[in-house]
Image (cartoon, rainbow, N blue to C red):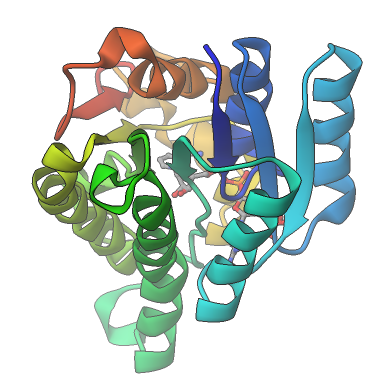
Amino acid sequence: MSGILVVTGGSRGIGAATAILGAKRGFSVAVNYNNSPDRADQVVAEIQAAGGTAHAIQADVSTEAGATSLFEQVDSKLGTVTALLNNAGIIQKNALIADYTAAMINEQMTINVTSQFLCAREAVKRMSTDNGGSGGAIVNMSSAAARLGGGGSLLAYAASKGAIDTFTKGLAAETAKQGIRVNAVRPGLIETEIHDGTGDMDRINNLMAGVPMGRAGTALEVAEAVIWLLSHEARYVTDTNVDVTGGR
Ligand code: NAP
């Protein structure tokens, strides 16, 4: 596998695992981060120690300036993007419908949805065979929450991931004849730091009983699905949603 992989939110969790696995499989990797330069540097160091190529790039991908600057820096430091993992995201504190304000809803949607639109736009501009590009593949990070609905705790988060499923379907159709494949991965309960954002510091243990396989997943288990979707082996796969949920 070769090419240039951009991972948004690559400094921790699923993004970091995908950056490291992607580099092992031959991608040169842009490890995007927003607030955690040390964590992004650790991911880059691990990739370089194994003989791979990676750069850490700071950008708030939920903003026009951030998304644009990320891809300009990738152009100059690594070359033209061929694979994108739209991964950056947050989970807010648990809330019921009565608790929501416009500011909370907009924050959740801007970070989880607007960011994926902006980064996909920058990637498609460069990948599209209509613009002289060589094509590429995009994976959008969704969640099982898109199916489960998030009622009782995470309504806005779940709705943001529902939007990602619809975005994936539309973008796949729009770009299929431009040499670009677009798919989504829907992780279930995965052991990362994101759960702390809910305010429930024992969230994984509290939800474990609802996982048919009886355990949480690992970031690597999600990364493996992502890298397959980005690979040549998935060359006839587009507009697909892969659940990595232990049956949840
Ligand atoms: P995580 O460990 O909390 O990591 C989140 C990453 O997103 C960090 O690298 C963070 O970077 C980055 N990020 C957040 N806002 C950003 C912004 N505005 N611009 C750039 N980077 C930003 O989370 P995770 O569990 O790996 O989740 C990754 C994705 O998987 C998310 O989209 C999440 O919704 C989805 N997911 C996770 C689970 C799960 O159980 N863990 C389940 C389903 C779906 P900084 O630290 O540098 O800010």
